Image 1 (cartoon, one colour):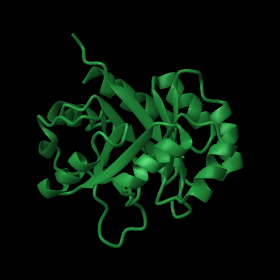
Image 2: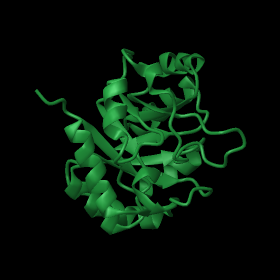
Image 3: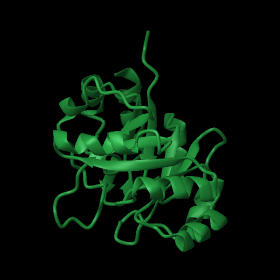
Image 4: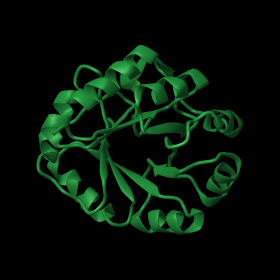
Length: 215
């Protein structure tokens, strides 16, 4: 029996991107609120995009070490289904955000070596979901979306109390192998379906989602 795989397409910046992701079968769409990213959105632009997301597709906001003032403004301006914390937020901060905004929280954890897996254990059960991403290079401007993969074998056979999503360097060409090697049931892709930084490619989105489903 085929395994059910959920796909998140992150860093969407145009209504055509949203439409392409939904048509391909993505179950999550991600909007980035981080000025250093080429995928950064204003609240106004994000509100327009969010309004075009079909019912049943989860709208996720990616933030990096955002304070309550920023999150207050974001959640008031943009209709969202989930908050993704992609910075150095502590477990206490995750719990605070969950309680304050009444939205599920996904916590991103960078993995580069086996020792980093302890962070996943730390946040499991506090966050509603975990995002297992490649640890960014030292000095990198972006905490994610760098198109880098990590050693997928580190995750083989691992189980956490919270559902988890695999990210980092995934493309239409390697996503099936990544799923087979890690056992991931959810994947998150941004740069791997772009023709240039911040510019999504509808055909790549379609091919990636299909490759994930067929894995």
